[in-house]
Image (tube, rainbow, N blue to C red; front, side, top):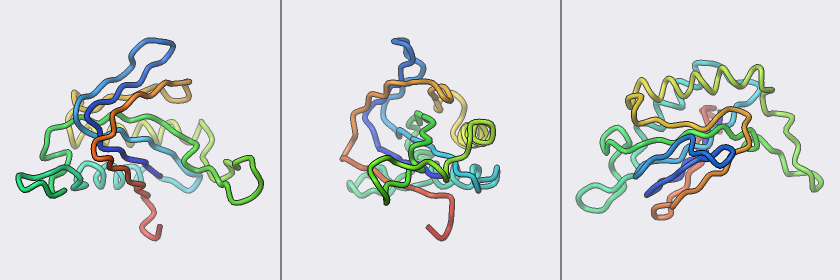
Length: 151
């Protein structure tokens, strides 16, 4: 699994003009599922994200996690994180998991994050929906996190 994380002041996802999820300070988490991913990879990624120290402490250093700050997480499925752009001009999505495989793994990741942070702090879009994502990147801080320990 791959996650593109952005530390945000606020973020919102809309589907068909209706707000599906909204958070204040916290993280926008765009999540892609690869063909080789497993439920264990989703749990490990959720653990990593919840405890990633990217929020300022009292001295202004990035030393606090989402668990410690009490911030929210807005999780949005994003299969394009597995795009391969090395050849030609059209991205290839050959390493992205198909919807039947990806959806339960995505939902498992979301549940793992809810188990760590509490359900009220984790908001989502809708799997496979066309979504509009609006955010205010705080910092800016943007990180790519991969569940593969060799990446």
